[in-house]
Amino acid sequence: MAVPKRRTSKRRKRARNTHKVAPAIVIQSCPQCSAAKRPHRVCAECGYYAGEQRVAAQEA
Image (cartoon, rainbow, N blue to C red; front, side, top):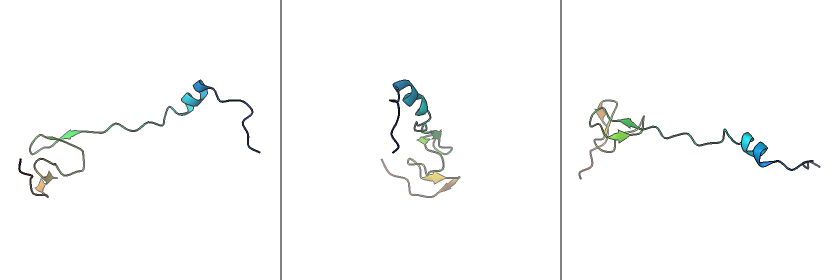
């Protein structure tokens, strides 16, 4: 049977799990309206992506 011979200490467990973190969210500014947006996504403010308007802009 696969049973641990010794209890895993907090230090050893935490050292093993140090790489298990969520990556930070990257924020860029839109080149058209300078609003904050995530890369490779249409801007929520102006609707532009890659220099072209892809979605109609939302009216405030």
